[in-house]
Image (cartoon, helix red, strand yellow):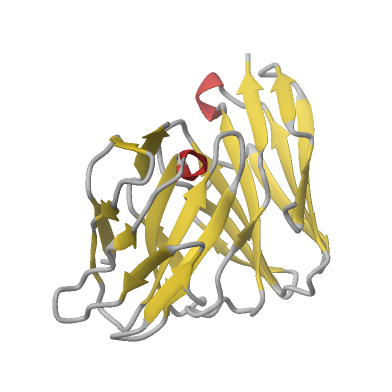
Length: 116
Length: 114
């Protein structure tokens, strides 16, 4: 069982919808991440939160809006997405913030997003 | 910048065969090296790691040695099982000004047939 929980597992949304992805961890980790993974590709980093503050934004379009309400929770708010945004969205956490090179990431099982 | 190159897949083996997946890297600093595995329909799981030269990471019969002289971190297993079928990602983590970030290889799909 993964220690990083993501909901929902699957999401289908239209281009005019607003939806949110949720991620939760109770390992006391201080850094949390959003990744996007297309089929047969490695994950691509989107955002990093360190001690609940946004520390890295990899030039992600504003239709993706992250939020870290507390040290255990991470949300990704979605609005006006495009079909090419369809992908697996992975949340991850790591023990140290700012992230340390020695600290491995713990991934959730992801939300499979389809934009119609 | 940092980069990771993995052997191209897919790789198909029979059960109990020997596995090697090659991984080489380029980094400006002193990275840590990781192998992650992704089973169908799941997220990535850490398989093993090594944080300095000559370290050997091992887990579940898999092992990899951090070779600074050849900038490599090849994954090996002596006898694969059907349950090892998955995608394997080599990755490095180097320290940046905002903390470290992972650089992944392209992934290698492994299929083990009974």
